[in-house]
Length: 159
Image: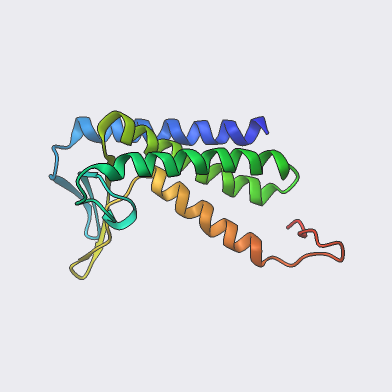
Protein backbone atom coordinates (compact mmCIF):
# COMPACT_ATOMS: atom_id res chain seq x y z
CA UNK A 1 0.00 0.00 0.00
CA UNK A 2 2.96 2.29 0.58
CA UNK A 3 3.64 2.65 -3.13
CA UNK A 4 0.09 3.79 -3.85
CA UNK A 5 0.16 6.36 -1.07
CA UNK A 6 3.61 7.49 -2.21
CA UNK A 7 2.29 7.96 -5.75
CA UNK A 8 -0.58 10.03 -4.38
CA UNK A 9 1.81 12.10 -2.28
CA UNK A 10 4.04 12.74 -5.30
CA UNK A 11 1.07 13.89 -7.37
CA UNK A 12 -0.17 16.14 -4.55
CA UNK A 13 3.29 17.71 -4.40
CA UNK A 14 3.31 18.26 -8.19
CA UNK A 15 -0.18 19.75 -8.01
CA UNK A 16 0.69 22.13 -5.20
CA UNK A 17 4.02 23.15 -6.76
CA UNK A 18 2.35 23.88 -10.09
CA UNK A 19 -0.31 26.00 -8.38
CA UNK A 20 2.31 27.85 -6.36
CA UNK A 21 4.29 28.56 -9.53
CA UNK A 22 1.22 29.84 -11.39
CA UNK A 23 0.28 32.19 -8.54
CA UNK A 24 3.78 33.67 -8.78
CA UNK A 25 3.81 33.98 -12.59
CA UNK A 26 0.24 35.04 -13.34
CA UNK A 27 -2.04 37.75 -12.04
CA UNK A 28 -5.63 36.73 -11.30
CA UNK A 29 -7.66 36.56 -14.50
CA UNK A 30 -4.69 37.22 -16.77
CA UNK A 31 -3.32 34.64 -19.12
CA UNK A 32 -0.30 33.69 -21.17
CA UNK A 33 -0.87 32.24 -24.62
CA UNK A 34 1.26 29.09 -24.91
CA UNK A 35 -0.14 27.72 -28.19
CA UNK A 36 -3.05 28.71 -30.44
CA UNK A 37 -5.26 26.33 -28.40
CA UNK A 38 -3.73 26.49 -24.89
CA UNK A 39 -3.29 29.29 -22.35
CA UNK A 40 -2.12 29.52 -18.79
CA UNK A 41 -4.63 31.58 -16.82
CA UNK A 42 -5.05 32.04 -13.07
CA UNK A 43 -8.59 31.56 -11.77
CA UNK A 44 -10.04 30.62 -8.39
CA UNK A 45 -12.94 28.18 -8.52
CA UNK A 46 -15.15 28.29 -5.43
CA UNK A 47 -17.37 25.60 -6.89
CA UNK A 48 -16.89 22.03 -8.04
CA UNK A 49 -16.30 20.69 -11.55
CA UNK A 50 -17.32 23.14 -14.28
CA UNK A 51 -17.76 25.80 -11.54
CA UNK A 52 -20.84 24.00 -10.19
CA UNK A 53 -22.15 26.02 -7.21
CA UNK A 54 -19.38 28.61 -7.58
CA UNK A 55 -21.82 31.47 -7.10
CA UNK A 56 -23.30 30.05 -3.87
CA UNK A 57 -22.89 32.14 -0.72
CA UNK A 58 -19.90 30.20 0.67
CA UNK A 59 -21.51 27.18 2.30
CA UNK A 60 -20.28 25.01 -0.59
CA UNK A 61 -16.66 25.22 0.61
CA UNK A 62 -17.30 23.08 3.69
CA UNK A 63 -19.52 20.72 1.71
CA UNK A 64 -16.83 20.08 -0.92
CA UNK A 65 -14.16 19.68 1.76
CA UNK A 66 -16.32 17.13 3.60
CA UNK A 67 -17.13 15.20 0.42
CA UNK A 68 -13.45 15.06 -0.59
CA UNK A 69 -12.31 13.96 2.87
CA UNK A 70 -14.95 11.23 3.07
CA UNK A 71 -14.04 10.09 -0.45
CA UNK A 72 -10.34 10.06 0.52
CA UNK A 73 -11.00 7.82 3.52
CA UNK A 74 -13.07 5.52 1.30
CA UNK A 75 -10.29 5.39 -1.31
CA UNK A 76 -7.69 4.45 1.32
CA UNK A 77 -10.02 1.71 2.56
CA UNK A 78 -10.42 0.39 -1.00
CA UNK A 79 -6.66 0.51 -1.55
CA UNK A 80 -6.14 -1.69 1.53
CA UNK A 81 -8.75 -4.21 0.38
CA UNK A 82 -7.59 -4.50 -3.24
CA UNK A 83 -3.79 -4.34 -3.09
CA UNK A 84 -3.37 -7.04 -5.76
CA UNK A 85 -5.43 -5.16 -8.35
CA UNK A 86 -2.76 -2.95 -9.87
CA UNK A 87 -4.84 -0.93 -12.30
CA UNK A 88 -7.60 -0.40 -9.75
CA UNK A 89 -5.11 0.82 -7.12
CA UNK A 90 -3.32 3.04 -9.62
CA UNK A 91 -6.64 4.68 -10.54
CA UNK A 92 -7.57 5.12 -6.88
CA UNK A 93 -4.18 6.70 -6.17
CA UNK A 94 -4.80 9.29 -8.87
CA UNK A 95 -8.25 10.09 -7.47
CA UNK A 96 -6.87 10.33 -3.93
CA UNK A 97 -4.15 12.73 -5.04
CA UNK A 98 -6.63 14.95 -6.85
CA UNK A 99 -9.04 15.04 -3.95
CA UNK A 100 -6.32 15.94 -1.45
CA UNK A 101 -4.75 18.55 -3.75
CA UNK A 102 -8.05 20.35 -4.21
CA UNK A 103 -8.96 20.08 -0.50
CA UNK A 104 -5.68 21.74 0.36
CA UNK A 105 -6.62 24.66 -1.91
CA UNK A 106 -10.08 24.98 -0.38
CA UNK A 107 -8.66 24.97 3.16
CA UNK A 108 -5.80 27.39 2.38
CA UNK A 109 -7.45 29.73 -0.15
CA UNK A 110 -11.20 29.12 0.06
CA UNK A 111 -11.19 28.04 -3.60
CA UNK A 112 -9.40 25.71 -5.98
CA UNK A 113 -6.62 27.25 -8.06
CA UNK A 114 -7.07 26.45 -11.76
CA UNK A 115 -4.69 27.48 -14.53
CA UNK A 116 -4.86 25.14 -17.56
CA UNK A 117 -7.05 26.68 -20.25
CA UNK A 118 -7.69 24.79 -23.49
CA UNK A 119 -9.76 26.36 -26.25
CA UNK A 120 -10.71 25.69 -29.84
CA UNK A 121 -12.88 27.63 -32.32
CA UNK A 122 -13.83 30.16 -29.63
CA UNK A 123 -14.91 27.54 -27.11
CA UNK A 124 -12.96 27.40 -23.83
CA UNK A 125 -12.98 24.25 -21.76
CA UNK A 126 -13.32 25.30 -18.10
CA UNK A 127 -9.88 25.93 -16.59
CA UNK A 128 -8.51 23.05 -14.53
CA UNK A 129 -5.35 21.92 -12.72
CA UNK A 130 -3.12 18.90 -12.10
CA UNK A 131 -5.42 17.58 -9.34
CA UNK A 132 -8.44 17.75 -11.66
CA UNK A 133 -6.44 15.91 -14.32
CA UNK A 134 -5.52 13.19 -11.83
CA UNK A 135 -9.16 12.74 -10.79
CA UNK A 136 -10.29 12.56 -14.42
CA UNK A 137 -7.59 10.08 -15.43
CA UNK A 138 -8.30 7.98 -12.34
CA UNK A 139 -12.03 7.92 -13.08
CA UNK A 140 -11.41 6.95 -16.71
CA UNK A 141 -9.09 4.16 -15.58
CA UNK A 142 -11.76 2.90 -13.16
CA UNK A 143 -14.24 2.76 -16.03
CA UNK A 144 -11.68 0.98 -18.21
CA UNK A 145 -10.93 -1.47 -15.40
CA UNK A 146 -14.61 -2.22 -14.87
CA UNK A 147 -14.97 -3.13 -18.56
CA UNK A 148 -12.01 -5.51 -18.61
CA UNK A 149 -12.88 -9.19 -18.92
CA UNK A 150 -12.79 -11.45 -15.87
CA UNK A 151 -11.43 -14.96 -15.66
CA UNK A 152 -13.53 -17.95 -14.59
CA UNK A 153 -13.12 -17.09 -10.87
CA UNK A 154 -14.47 -13.56 -11.34
CA UNK A 155 -11.03 -11.95 -11.12
CA UNK A 156 -9.76 -9.37 -13.57
CA UNK A 157 -7.20 -10.59 -16.07
CA UNK A 158 -3.90 -8.75 -15.76
CA UNK A 159 -2.75 -7.06 -18.96
